[in-house]
Image (cartoon, rainbow, N blue to C red; front, side):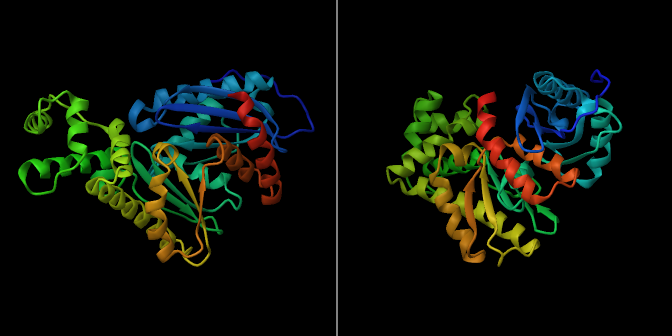
Length: 336
């Protein structure tokens, strides 16, 4: 439980946003005008991965740091917004809210969303579709009425592609097809042999099958490198990834009746950040079904979207939120 100090009367509204990711957690404290007052950081907090107790611990740690930098305490905060990696189902909501109230105080107004939603809240309209391609993949959307639709976020288990993990798995299939004679040779083969230290292709395939060689998400850049050199297999892999990611966007757009509203598509994750070419394979798939869609990179830290959520809890107007967003995006980097 965070230590509570007696709140003092003030004429300023303060908001707390927390982004609980799988690898790190960030908290941000701002004024209603978007003046950034404090940033806090802690480790990963996906409750499905680390457990509820550690989830509470990292939220408390990050929030306490941000408040301490701001010179504030919890009673000074008007409301809070929390994006949570692993919050995928309505059945989780009550337990997560209970856990958060236990560390942030039972009377603090707050709301929670999946962390992928935070990118939407940073967008100029506060609705649209967030497409995530990092180690894994996900897709969430929100329409102007505030309704949500989403993929499961469970990757290969539920037939959803393609983050780096799924892209590399598909590439391994192609290399295996070369060895069996089922597919054509690819420039990926010598790169994978070099990466693992295998003696040759046969040794690579045996080692991958028997578990003494491993190729994970970290080798995804090799696929893009081969594609830039014109390797047909690598190019087909990127086309496949773009088709799969695009299909998720189109599905969410249809479920939310956004196909004719030219939604913003916020591109999130290391794959889009480090491999811009991936977006070129996604765009035609989406635009064929959602004409006018705009593709935007994540403009700032996702935790800024958590502050926006906190402002929505307090019923701050969208006009004021947009003004605050502009200020936050200008100043948040100084707290890096």
